[in-house]
Image (cartoon, rainbow over all chains, first blue to last red; front, side, top):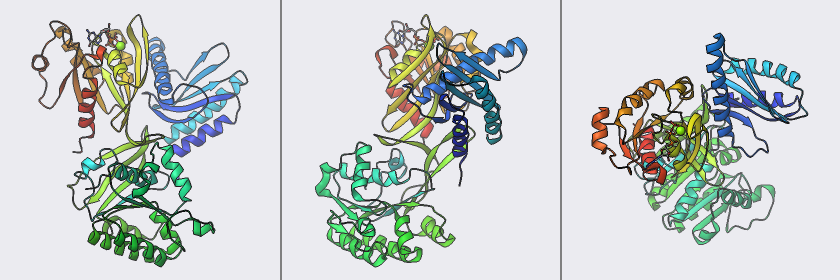
Length: 122
Length: 389
Ligand SMILES: Nc1nc2c(ncn2[C@@H]2O[C@H](COP(=O)(O)OP(=O)(O)OP(=O)(O)O)[C@@H](O)[C@H]2O)c(=O)[nH]1
Ligand SMILES: [Mg+2]
């Protein structure tokens, strides 16, 4: 018997095969962690989920006012990493942390497909 | 009574398992059900009882290692713990244990060892690590007949019997017997994926000595720590400067705040581990200009702390309004009367009156900056969330 959690984990596994992804998670827009692929980073996943959701919420509050639209994705670029938050349906977000080695274009493309799958599950 | 050691479960069972009774942890495949039996083993040892643990799905030394992982030192109780090795003979390995089931695929062998123990030992807690494994090896019908007998004998000799059982696809008849007839109490353990809440839960399916409780509890398994009740989201909201962030940090074992110049601009997040509970708490900003974020942040909460500055009744209207913004009506909430250390702080009754609070909403006094009263407030809210009604 396959649970939704298993299926979501599988989506993350598939996503990780692109390469360059250091951390990935599916979180609710209200900040609850649904599933994550643990990595070496020190931050605990629950806090990570909550912080990502606030990032998205702030962006959403902003774009709704500007253009009456919700963000499809938020990309935060630091010196050597990208944090990508991708909306997956009305309730969920996929978040990935990409290191130097990742190809952002390719990953965005995969995220789009993954988001579609997540949306159909929840 | 023998306590199960599972938080909240003993309370629901009216104190634990009475002597002579049997209980089964009935878990769906894929959830961490076997920990329940182990936690009961450790708990009964810790509280001074004798305990038998029937190990049938791994080598006993591996099982002992698992106890260590949870931070449970069972060596300390060596003279009161009797391990029945029903695994090593299966793989032809020698056993270090005093009690060994020489042919674990023959129920008669089990009968002999178990019945002897039942007769020899003073009233004890006898825990079967995996009844399903025994069933797989010895046959469903045969095992059920023996279980009936063990339970009967245990009643005569005043033992408590506890079984872990995983619901593999057995015959309907077997499952029916296990769920309805064989045991005095059945605790069901499963997983839920309800919208965005993912987790494992337990609840009482049946108990012939305690009054029925319909609540299910979410839980998590921590290493070390064992089974902790899990509350994925508790909201902390209230007017500007009331002390919400201070409150979140005072409660939490670890916390993060997103703030600028002392005011919260996005959120506080904290993790609380307290008295068998594991909870994540989310603090909102207080200033009106962040209302859109507050609104988005508050979904999926299971309970709310409404923090107010006891010296500032002018803000109580705003406080009430925040319950509105966070759509928290209908959720259990407590009013946290903070800054009780300040001159001019209103008394609890005055706050209740000014708020015009319903009688069933508790008001808890705190001095968040000195961590005074915060855990008491936590307990009050948890009791409201998990009340069991
Ligand atoms: N005297 C006293 N001061 C407190 C207490 N709790 C918090 N404070 C102080 O009150 C001020 C505001 O505390 P915060 O925890 O930042 O309040 P907040 O509700 O998170 O504020 P916003 O996020 O801006 O809405 C700080 O200076 C705290 O030190 C208390 O119990 N007593
Ligand atoms: Mg704050």
